[in-house]
Length: 198
Ligand code: GTP
Ligand code: MG
Image 1 (cartoon, rainbow, N blue to C red):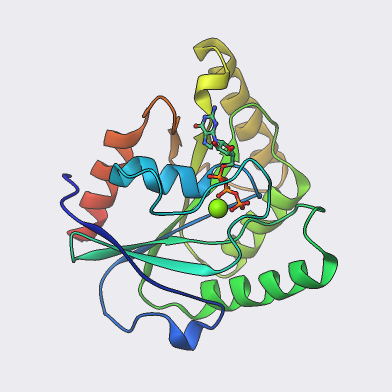
Image 2 (cartoon, rainbow, N blue to C red; image 1 turned 135 degrees about the vertical axis):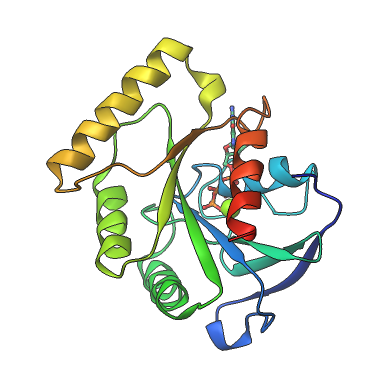
């Protein structure tokens, strides 16, 4: 799929104030600093559409970006980082939970994990939350430029094993990406394009 336009629409913490357009929506979630905002920028060929930072806790709101005037990409705050104050984390958790439970336009969630690390407890917990509420998600292994291809493959296998051990009967589709190397872009956009036509 070709990206013709990508525009910021609105940021907020209140699901009631998210756009009312009845168009497909795709959300990016994962631990803070995993590369959610960078991946959005990579997909839409812009450097600064979504704000990124080396410090975890940069994205603090629900951010809607309208793509090709036809669908939304949604950047969310990360979960699981102690650098953000406990009270703020609680607020994030509340509105993120509400977003996933109530956002009817949400077609698919991309759950980002760092290619270098094993699944963390918070990742497995978040997956369980999505599973319990039948919210479809795919996996995205980010920062693949930091690993050799063989190591990525090995880590994917470890990830799969841990998900099976955690009770999952099947593993969702997984994408391997690098925002710096632009890897995985065509696959992800093609996949979203397919979902858009369903
Ligand atoms: P929060 O908004 O804090 O939850 O973080 P985030 O998940 O949106 O991460 P963000 O995109 O801000 O990136 C965090 C850091 O990782 C930044 O320093 C990015 O430059 C870096 N980064 C993101 N993606 C990649 C990647 O594919 N490769 C490399 N090498 N660095 C990356
Ligand atoms: Mg971010």
